Image (cartoon, rainbow, N blue to C red; front, side, top):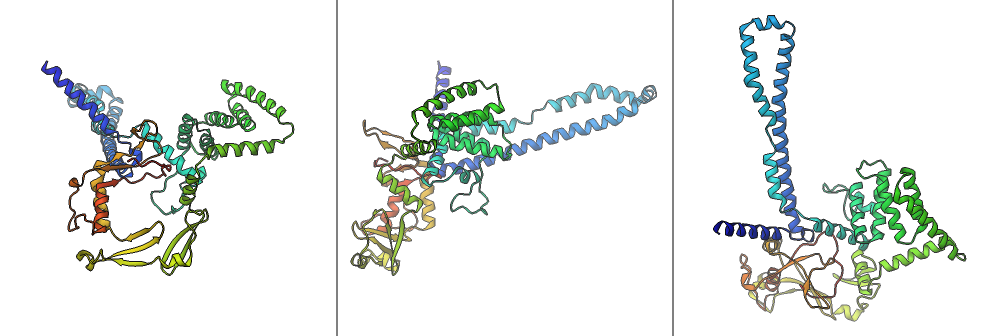
Length: 461
């Protein structure tokens, strides 16, 4: 009974550890940095394994070269060679002892250290959900900033200079993987974009394990699902040139031809070009069935329709879409910058805070240089171990749950768990700097992944 109890405890511990190992890595850069160092450690372990294998092979090589020269001499006059008693003794010794040592050396497994390290670290690896989440985040980034696939594939993102050492590009296999994830989500629009990009790179001579037949198979079906039969038919014909016996492509060819003839019959009064444009606009409209607020916030992210109205040293943001009321001289006169001392609080008499009026109704204030870089790093250090996936409130059940568009992490804790940092004042109604620092410590937000979470109207954490 005691042995069974011990095994049950071990099993429960392993299951709990496995469940806690997965932390939605793709939602937090803070936790993905840990994966970088894990990967670096594995590379070091792999290089050690390579050195050990090379050392073993060098020993075997030296032994082979030594015996190669010896046997070449001995076989020229075997009787004369063995007539020397020392040669006869050494032959017996080699065959009885030394060849056994060579066998042990060849059979010695040098990978034990690397395999052990890999097995330990694998439990902290991201899973399929993380990979899919990161891919969908990249697709949302593409839509929000209206980036074409070639821009993303070459790594020439807006604001990223070519001199940066960490600029990365996407291979044919990477583009194919993005297309497959979109395909599994019945997102045929992005499936077409990324399969076409993979095919372009393959046509340009890039080496890949993915062949053109596979790409054309996905591409033609994705285009067909969007209602463009002619283009789907063209890609199917190209596929059959490469592989005439492709069973599915032969069936699709007949079906596409039949459907195309049927479509042309129904569109006698319209040209093919006009119909294609209509279908494209319809598909684009369905894909961008956004709320007006969402369309405006995406335009704001892209920097569209924004101008700065500067009155002396005051910057006011005004958009062409009237997100803000238009500025007037009277309103501008009420916006100014000043130093804030919290009603002559002793702490701020020596170091007042820079305060700027951003707007009057609603009143928006901006505090400058409130938190130092050192304090911000401390906040991130304290927040990182407590990060949890952000949730939303289900509009039907009211239950908190995760959502694919909300890719952030945060942590909530009572104020008593927040330590005093250095000589910073404790939270009080008279200290906006302390209030803000306390708020950052109590409500710690995770860093965002390289994507934009979709706008949401809920306020659940």
